[in-house]
Image (cartoon, rainbow, N blue to C red; front, side, top):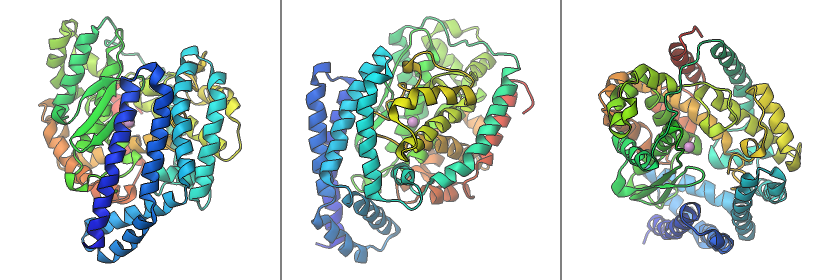
Length: 494
Ligand code: CO
């Protein structure tokens, strides 16, 4: 058998263990009894160590170098390139370190839940210190050119560096703080999504909106978790989670659509790529561009509410007399808020910048874990103008650090920026508003499939964006999008 064929079969075999890992992870966050936590953390640690050892075995290294000579198609060459990059990277990480990472982050997640419930960062701090030490060691093992944090960014957004971010962020921050001030001085739309909303009905509505945008329920399901996420167990099994608030309908609605966007991407990756290193999204940032696209650009548009209002009324009659404009404006309320996941498009990236700066400092030994809450509060005041009174609404709000996902947050920002660029590119040959207004989401999904989804991880983010939009990555699109949209929502000039 040719080495390339053997390599593919081996990857698919390993991916079966990853599927088991993902299913246990999903279960841990949705259904597992509390007392199972300690053992589950150990099980995940062992599985992860096993997978890591398989992926970095000498046999894989041998197969990879032989397969490199056989690969001819663009697909096979990309497979070998991506696989080799990952192999070389993970080969540098000893399986014990990887196992320790999985074990300590699983522990950290349980401790984070307790700390968040008690709203006390000091409960989480010692465990987070352990995680940060492991992450720093990972970065050192993997290596980097300029900044230790670059090694971590590369896990989530290949090619993105501290240098790139430090180029984008000051300009974007100034722009957003300025927009925020202008919005602050204008009239506030009423939040029509506040009231009493039956949880059962909300669950049905969540399913309905996912169906409407094209999510395939025969290849997925929706459950409840503390922090919403999307997870691919295998091809044909892409699950989402959400959470509900009886008094705030938009809380679950937009996070459901967000995860739906991630899931549409995953459901659009070709089966022939599955189990292979190219059978993933191009990057976390590109992934986030898809979730943000559906959440913000589609579901927070006026045409969306023109289409969706009658459906909403089927579930909640109280919206019968609410004008479409009010629904649209209420879905775009800009607020100086404490919580990232509830924040709007104007303040969202400011939340990310704060996290990025803290992470960069922690990883480069310029800051201590125990000082996170005080630095957090200072930056919140400076960027967003509000300060949390409790840690649960401050530094404990996100699960990412418990997961050891340092370097992840910037990909959220990149996602917002990519999404706007993709939007303007799609609008060139598609009557976007018309499609949304008539509920023809398929015409939009088809284009995203063709331009983004079907390529899996064959292209790096920068190349994918260039091919999909016809130009290099450019943050002007996002700034234009914000100006165009929010001057309408708030009836001001930006
Ligand atoms: Co997301």
